[in-house]
Image 1 (cartoon, one colour):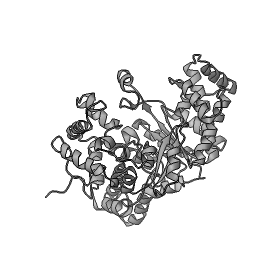
Image 2 (cartoon, one colour):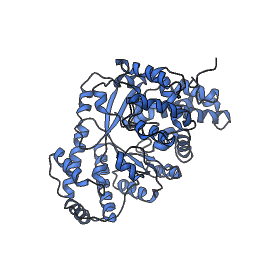
Image 3 (cartoon, helix red, strand yellow):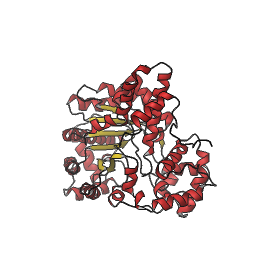
Image 4 (cartoon, helix red, strand yellow):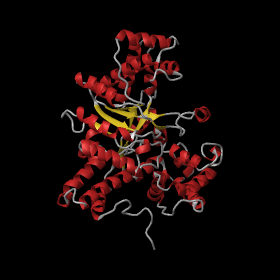
Length: 467
C-alpha cells in the first residue's frame, strides 16, 4: 500500500532534512505570537458544531479559491447550509493543487482528525460527517484544539476599545496554554477612514476621557496602553500600507485633528502628517512600556468596491500592493533610534520585491543591545507558503542572520491553522538539509545546525518575547 500523502517525511527530501526536523524541530512547543483568534471562544471553551464553522467561516483564502472555481457566493459566505458549503469546498480542493491550500487542507485533516483520505467531491460528505462528529465532543473544544498542537502561547489581537474581559477570564482560569493579546490601534491612526470620528467618540467613552484635541487623543491612547499592559499585553500590531513619515510641527497636528473633529475636510497630505505624528507617539510609548512592536506592511485592501459594499472588509478582496517602503521606514526607525526609543520591532513584508529591502533595513537598527532586536518577520498572508517562506528565509540568510530569526506565526482566525507551524518547520529543515547534501553546509556540524533549527522553531521567540 502506498504511504499517505501527509506522511512522516512530507516535504523532507533527504536524510539530513529528516534528522533536523524529527530530532530538533517537530517536538518543540508552539509560540504563536500573532493571530486573530477569538479570545471569547477560548475563554468559553467553545465547541464547534461542524467543520464548516471552524474551518470555512472567516477563511478568505478558501473563499477566493471557491469563487475562482465559479462557485456561487451562497455556498461561500451566503445562506447555504454548512454542509453544502463544505461539500462545495470539497469539490474545490483538487483544483487547489500547487496552491498552499492543498497542503494545509490535508495537514489539518491529518493532525486534528487523523484523516488521511484526500478531500474531494467524492469524499467530502464522509469527511464532513466524521469531522463534525468529533468536533462536537469536548476533546475538540477550542482549548483542547490548542493543546492538541502543543501550543505554549497564543497571542490574539485586540482594538484599544476592547475591555479584555475574556483575557481576564483566561488568566484567572487553570488553563495551561498562555493566552495574551496585542494592541492594534489602526482605527485611531487612519484619520481618512470612514467613521473615524465615531470611533474616536467610542475610544473617549472607553478611556473615560473626552477627546477634543490631539493631546487628548494621545492621553487616551496611553491610558489604554496602560490598561492593556496591566492585563499582561506586551505586544502591539499595525496593519499599514507603508510606514508614514513626514515632517510636521506640533501646531500643524493639533490643527489637523481639530479640523477632523469639527467634520471639516482634511487633505491627504494633512492625513499623512497626522499619521506620522501619532505613529511616532505610539512607538515611543511602546518603548516606554517595553513592548514589542509589529508592522504588517504592503497590503492593498478592498480592491473590489462592488463586493466590499455587499460583504464588507476582510472578505477576500485584498492583494499585494506595490507601495514604496524603504525611505519612510528608514526615517521612522531612525527617528526613534536617535532618541534611543526604538522598541523591539518586527517588520512583515507582503511584496516579495521588497524582501531584500527589509532584510537589509533590519541590520541598520540591530545595535547589539538585544539579540535580533529588529526582525524581518516570517512570510505573511500571500507569502506564508513554501515559495514565499523560502524567499523570505533566503533574503534574511543572505543579508542578515537567520540564526536569530524568531520563526513562524499563523496570523489566522482559524483554530485549525496551527499546522502551518509544522509546514514552516519542514520547509526550514528541508532548505538546510538540501544545502548540507550539496556540501554548502558542513554535515559534521549537524548538532549546531540542529540547535539553529530548534532556536528558529521555538527558543528565539521564547527569549525575544520573554512572557
